[in-house]
Each structure stands twice: as structure tokens, then as C-alpha cells.
Length: 428
Ligand SMILES: *Cc1c(COP(=O)(O)O)cnc(C)c1O
Image (cartoon, rainbow, N blue to C red; front, side, top):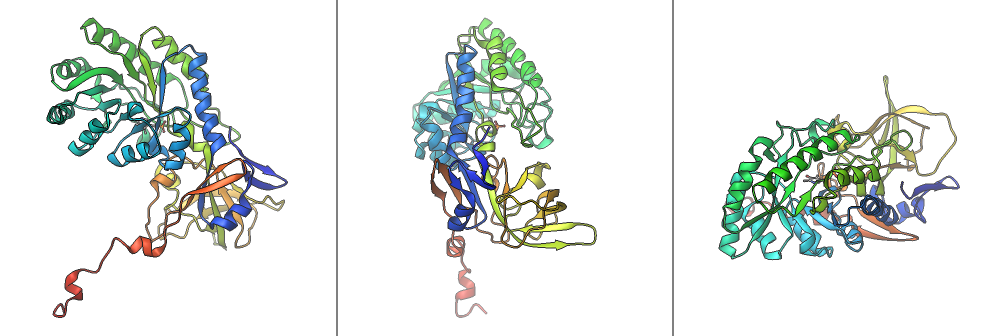
């Protein structure tokens, strides 16, 4: 469910007319809907309550869409944050998420990142190896702090998702091998400065079937029992993110959050543990669109190209993951449809937003909306071809605010310089 809909043939974000917004902000731009963000958070939150999970913490996975306006919107609803870098820690705190609701994931945390998390007093570190345990213990001892620790264990399940977003198989770089889990907890328990109190799993992203979750949860319940049998005090279970969303708005039905919550309850309602969830895509994907203008069309010998002012630099998912995003007109028209490859201006053959899309022939300046672009969209942008980052606009009802402005070219060049030796007199 989202709040992008047509009224009299024009696409609106909530009560904001996107033709008007494009005029004000310029294209390309991202547009996010507050009502949709709230709705998605609420659906998951209510599903947990309804399933009888009475101690849950939803830590929004900031990497999906880390605009501080988006994070702040979720923070006001009570969300925590799942972060993977020092930068994301700063974003989460700038957006008003209290440290007690921040969990720090990621396979490559540095000493500085660990220290910053400890100084801030974050809820827990999700640790992925024995070496990382040792390192975190050393940093904690140096600072005179205790780190609350979850071990990210790898349940070796195939999430049935794209290879680049699958994380829970034995061959992936993430987590501690299932067979090594008990020994890793014993190791952690023996280190001063660490308090191993949680189990963490995250098996992948855009998972569209509950089966892999079921397998992973059952294995986790078994591990919990084994750890408790060894007198380890486990009080939290972090079950990661990964719940899929519909990218084809009319013909996809990903798992129902209530069924997901009930599956969690089935396995863990009696565990006495707090349940931490780390949804990213579920919250943000369908809360955002990318609006772009047609530059011109080009009918090639084999194909028709619709060249637009957004590119892989704004939305890389189509070319990186082979991802499908619905593409629609911002102002609907009733004309003969042709198949178009919707491509950007970037000098790469892989620069496309959609292939063989049924659209009318459009005049330069016509507006298109690329749907379901709120997660892993703007955050994966680049400035390749010296393209300024697309602005991000957050809508709430009839109002909007530009929550990230488009940088000027001067902004873009500001960090660069011509080396001193080329400027010196004798540098010829
Ligand atoms: C990326 C990530 C998430 C969020 O995944 P979604 O598929 O967006 O829900 C959660 N936890 C960890 C550890 C991640 O790396």
C-alpha cells in the first residue's frame, strides 16, 4: 500500500501534485511519502502486537534510505536504527534516534567505529567473527565500557533471493558459521568488556517466501536452547530484516507482515527475549518514487529508446540487480503504446531504468515516475559523469520539504584541487 495515486489523470504524492512539484524542484528528484512510511512502520508494529509479541524493537535499517528526514519520521514513531557505519550512527543520532535503540551491524567495523558506538552507549553490537569479538573487547576495555553483544550467526539457509542480496548461506561473507556458534559464545563470555546477551541473524533481502525465515527461526530457537543450557544469559533475539515488497504493483504478493509476526511468535513468544527486527526495504521501498523528465526519444533500428534525465547514477538497481521497477506517466494519456527502453544519459550500456516498457511516444519534457524507489535508491547514487545527486523531497499531506538539496557544480568541485606543482612557477 502506498500514497502515490492518480487524480484526474495526474500522479499525486499524498496531496501534492507531482507535475507542480517537478516544476518547483527540477528533475530528476526523489519523492518520499510520510503517510506511506508511517503506514509501513505501523503495519509491522501492529502485526507484532497482534501476534502477541509484547517486547519488540523495530530498528529501521538505515542503509535502505538514510535521509535524516526519513529517519526522523520513523524515530518519531518509536523506531530504533540498525546501522552499519560511523556515518550512519551520526545520521541516526542527528535524526533523533536514541542510542539505546541503535544496533550496529556490519562485517568490517573499525576501532574508531566501535569506540564511537561505545561512547554513544548504543544498544548492541552485532559481531560477525572471533577476531571482531577480540577487537571490540580491546576497545571496550581501553574506554572502560562494556559492550552488549549479539553474535551474528549464519544459519546456512538459502533465502531464494538474488545472489547479490543473499547473506545467510555458508558461502557468504556474513556471520559466524553455525557449527562454530557455541564456541564463539563461550569465547565472548570469557572476554572482559563484553556481555554476550543476544543472537542475531539476517539471511538476505527481498525475501518473498516465509519458508527460509521458518528454517532460520527454528535453527535459532534450537541455538537459544543450547546456549541457555550452558548458562549463557540471552535476553534478545535480533532477527534481521529482509522481508520482501511488491515491485510490480499489480501482480506480486510478498509475505504478509502478520504471518511473519506469527511465525516469530510461534518460535519465540515464550522465549522471554526482546525481539529486534531490522526492516529496511519493507518500510521505505514503496514510500518513494523517482521522477524524471524525457529528454528525447530515439527510434533505433532494433529498439526504441526513451532517453530521460535520470540514470543509473540515481537508481542503480535495474542494472546492478536486474531489478524491476514499474515506470508510469506522471500525466496519463490515452495513446498507442510502444515498447521503449527507458535509458539515462550516462555513458554505459548498462545505464537503463527499464527495458521494453509499454509507453506512448512522449514529447521532450514529459514526466515519468519510477515506482518503488524509496529503498536502495538515492543511497546507492553516484556522481559518475559529474551528475549532481538528485534532490530528495519528503511529502506530508499537502506540504513538502526538500530534505536533501541538489548540490551545485561548485559544491561538487569544492573538495578537489589542481596539485600545487602544476600551479608553481617552475612546474613546467
Ligand atoms: C541490509 C540489512 C538489513 C535490511 O534489509 P532489508 O532487506 O532492507 O529489510 C537488515 N539487517 C542487516 C544486517 C542488513 O545488512
